[in-house]
Length: 633
Image (cartoon, rainbow, N blue to C red; front, side, top):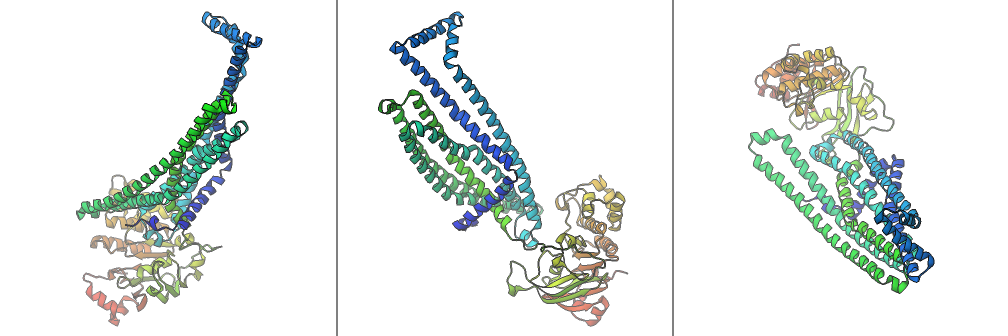
């Protein structure tokens, strides 16, 4: 499988990077006081621990040197100081205090400055940690909410074309990418920039020639590091894509583990997983080699910079008359700066990884919504439940116009009527129901509910008026109570039990060890197909929506379960406009009306008796199905 990032144009990659910064910057701007405090604390931490300390030590060195020179020259003050120093050594050994007083007099202010610098440095260090942690907590919440809302709002076409496990992986990487970039900025980028500014600013006034040469070398270092950074960025995106594909492969195999085991395909699935895993290994190996090569190039520049400082330190006093304290500052500042810049390689690798991890979800966040509410969308109010499909044309978003499912389609369903949709697979039955639920948008025409165009209504208000029971019951890994009450969370105990009773589910629920509190397992795997379906029907009964859509609700059930569920469906459809999609004609034979579809067109329309008498396609389907029976009204 070819990695998508390997064919992504550089211009598009840069665009995705900017969009990633847009999303991250947006959540950071909401916490700008905390971010500003993080920057200030970082500057304070770097200055007081890396620059104030050496500056004071340089002053001490110059003071000691000055005293030594004065003493050697025989100055009276120096002699007294020398005597004081000797007395200090002697007094320290014998318990006297005169020498200590001389030391405090000469170096007391420097001691206070050193202690103060360390206290302030440690304070800013802890403040830095607090602000970064706080920012990450708040940003993680905001980004997770944004991603969840985006994925929830996307169309079913979007979700049908993606692995659920891959989306989860991309979400985690996107949120983690923020922490990676923030920590790289606060703990590395700002310290590196501030270290360069502090070093050049302080040394420019003391040793202009040295500072000027240092600036040139630093500029060369940054340019080389940035060019290498740009070359590695696509490798990080490729690695992130490979990891997402691996997560999707793992999720797909685990989700369908029953099929894997029953067909003995463990070895095959392991092969697929191993191929995806090897792509991850290959992508990570390329990234590793490029990062090491970049590290070698930047390390060479560090050696050049340190060679410069060695030359100046050894000959600076003789050639330029640089004081010993200044020489100490030059070495300490330059060494500290090179240590910061030495981290630039790791920092760029982390930044690369952060952008690579965020790439997939950033692209998803930028994807247009295939189905979205129009501006000023209204709440749909359903009083009767009449439905009209009016001159409707539709093809799927990933298909061409020539592959139309419906073209100029018309169908009217009066309020309260129970309508069955039958026909061969691919005739458009399920598509018609998904369009009513507005899981996809029409290319032309409109769908009206009680005279209201559903395209102008909010999606939530539309779907809250439709009870939907699919062929595969959609159960959460939660309790049976929560699953039944999903459409009406505030339902009372009696309402939940009443709905379960009408769905012919209460008997088996009460027989379970934990009754309504029984966990159903992922997708309801702990329950049988018929039990899952009855839970889904109980949910629809409790929701009490005026419109009902049943999509192959009994197709995969045994006869006994089908009889129970048909009785439950009869209770469910009572007084509601109902659309029933079925291959088993016994499910629709007792309905008020049956519509036969073929290639997106209505070929027959009438009651069961009328269609049997017409001896058309419905009658032929009926004759071919054995064991069919009519449900009594």
